[in-house]
Image (tube, rainbow, N blue to C red; front, side):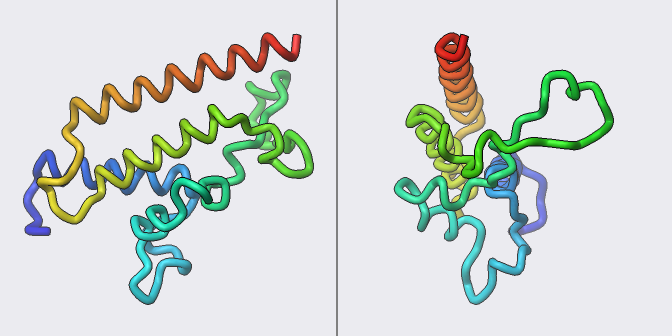
Length: 140
């Protein structure tokens, strides 16, 4: 708030960035008005409505053949991109949103410490990757 560069300020920015990336909207999006912020929007939705706020483009898949093409054609997994989302993936999304919320708290003293952010994000990534491997094994 004071305009000084600080670790708590960086953590706040990181939290907002996480929310932006996973919601697919910036903090100045037209949806955020009349006192509704990206932080409040996320907090109100969790945990029951996580799939209502997550950016649906996260569930688009590029064909493996087209990965190296410059064409940005993507296909949806099915009509409803959330149909195949496992409970483990939903848990990972909830945890990511919770980290975003903890990092973007108003009071710098309440924000998650950097080392905890790193370890939590790493754990979420590992859980997600294990889930993906299990899904691939089931498909083959």
